[in-house]
Amino acid sequence: MPAGMPDANALGRACAHLAGTASLELLPGATDQIPELARLLPAGTRIFVPHLPGRPLGNGVPTLAALRAAGFEPVAHVAARRIASRSEFGSFMEAASTAGVREILALGGDLDPPAGPFKEAADLLAADMILGTGIGAVHFGAYPDAHPRITVAALAASMQRKFDLAARLGIAARIVTQFSFEPENVAALARRMPAGSQVRLGIAGPCAVTTLMRYARLCGVGNSLRAAANLGTGALQLAGNADPTASLEALVAALGTSVASADGHGLHVYTFGGARRAAAWLSAMSRPRAAP
Image (tube, rainbow, N blue to C red):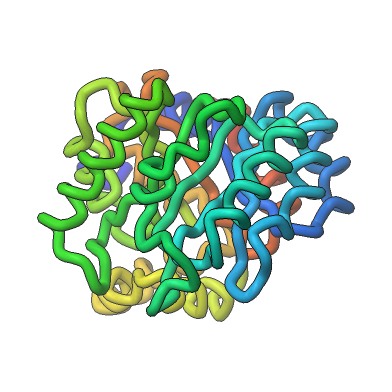
């Protein structure tokens, strides 16, 4: 066993716990995949539906409704800077509530200048338009490798504002991290969060290396990708994620098996359009493996 790796049985149990309680993403319109996801994943699994660039905010509502009908917990992405008006946001929240959405992921979005009145995720909460919609939890994004355009201090201040606003509204505040090729960065970010915070640890799901590299650049984790490249062939294979098991094991080792096995943290799998493949991997990983 490599130096620094935990006991194999403890590692397997921690990986199985994270896989068995993981969330993942499903693209809007991919409702044909839902029956297979229901076969592979536990009822109540959180499935996040992205708010894609250039698409109306309401584009994902039918998918959210289909996920709820299939027994999942649908989580709607809401990208503040892509919302054209308060009325668009209000209409979406009403439709999402009717579809059974009880949780959202509030993001700033990357549109500059903003399409409408919202500049950051906190503005969505400050508008008080979530009240009365049945939303009980809001997830916020966090960046293990730092944000390409926002300082660490500014990110910390923004996160505190979002937590304060959520508390004022009586809504649970949670964290979802971006994926990274440096597991220690993800673990370090989780440790920096306030005590008791629920943190979903981002990991890239199974996909082709070319797909992973493209999304890494789009998602602002290019520095992490370059760092992996500098570490040599083994790190690049880990980053390739044809099978992300090694990435999950490295994350658990960085976090510590006792922390990874606790109820406070979870796993969030970025699927890059391959939700069925990610669900099959999670299903297999959720079964603990005996040490050889």
